Image (cartoon, rainbow, N blue to C red; front, side, top):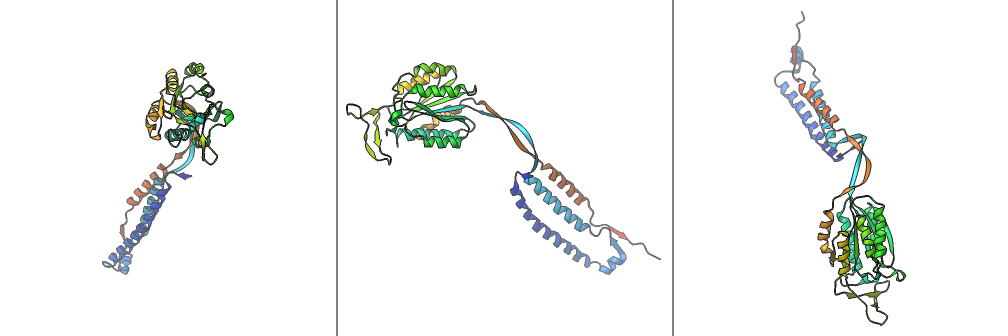
Length: 338
């Protein structure tokens, strides 16, 4: 047995003053009776039918109160099973981990802002399935589709800039991997958040947009950074600035947000483009996300404890009625014995 509201048992404290009142009233009635008739005369003239009735009434009153409090605590025992439809959409986060995401045109830098964006979206969703892909020159699934949001947050926090041997920015690899995840999932709405500065260096991504559209994968590109761009800092493991990334001619490389590419991807897949420079700009993005119709992603069977509060409640009412029905004063005269 369990209780849905066990704190209700604290109300048992009211039994203490109730019992004190009952005891006080009993002795007060007894004292009042003595003022009218002596104990000897009472015994001589008659007797009280069921002299124990006051005690029975008090006992029944206390029992009814206990039963009412128990009903309020919500006793539950036994269980039933019900089918539960989990509705949501599938969200695939595709996070750019190229060197250009270290640019500090948004504070503290593009990459940290991108990860904060994912974490903030995670705070607002309830039953949607989520996945994480990181990419630079190659793409990797960091988290398959799941509703385990705690694991997703940990993997997002652990994401880092790709090593030098995997550098470059290839949308094709990232979107191909998102397409594979989308194909093995349900037929509900599937959204891809492509979080990047838009500087693709391979330009193969146009080949895959039609396939994504046919699979009903809607891409929402999120541009991190500003159009005027910024240099790419080079730092050591402790975060100390060592210099700036340079090209083969020794010139400092300046990375710019490529909105043209991102707007084109959004248009071709039926999504919307967002430029994101500050975490406070998340409201519009979330509004778009919430507008999508949620369909059944999964079905589960759960066991539910059966509420049994009506049993102590009904029993308490019966006991209380019986207590009220007892007549406390009922006198009978003794027959004269000749």
